[in-house]
Length: 78
Image (cartoon, rainbow, N blue to C red; front, side):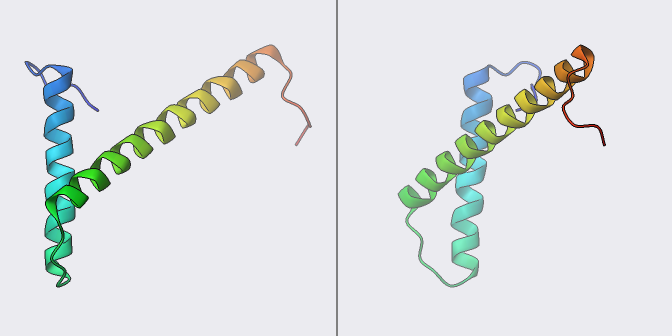
């Protein structure tokens, strides 16, 4: 998450989690469902954690590719 001046990390995560929970709940209401707020909160946690894990993996792969390019062991020539 992008840092917000004056906010602690836990406050940023809580605000993000609440926003995603509310978005999921409102989307459920918009399509005619009666979603449970607890189910939406769990879905928000899973969505956020999945996104963070994907972002970390993407960053790690980019660093590894850059390191291979610097080392000159890029594998097959294209």
